[in-house]
Length: 202
Image (cartoon, rainbow, N blue to C red):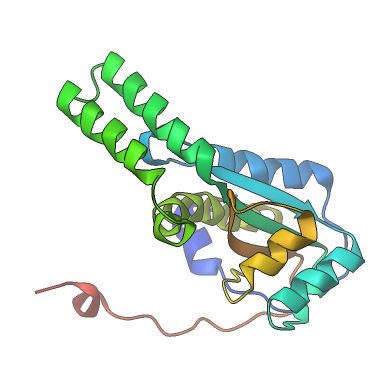
């Protein structure tokens, strides 16, 4: 099994997949890795739709401006956030942290008041806060997938409203990313990375 460092070094964005199916047991393992991700106040707002039928995968590819490789992946995860559950989870999570002494009472109050204020925000305003939580869970999936020799590719270029319409979801479900998953049919070279000096602020 790969170390975390080895997984980070091995990871590539895969855009060519073999047709081999991905076992349901492996999918369960990937979801388990997402379930273990951290989130603000332990709100756990992530929600996932597993898509394996060709017709729906084609529709998803169309919502992503016809990136055809999405439909060629054996599995596409639609990675989402549940907005109302995020708000409720933030309140209950903050209260739980207060009870065990992990947060001071004043911080619990600030978090609970902040969560109440979120109810007044538009989806566009609240989405970035939630997306950060879901992104952590997605990256857990991306790295865990390497243990099964699977490739993935983050997709953010997509029409979120069209995706919601495919599944009949309302605006309470915010689509964060599409994640094609399958056995790679390519071995891309690593892409350039900035040096540590370049990413440190002065």
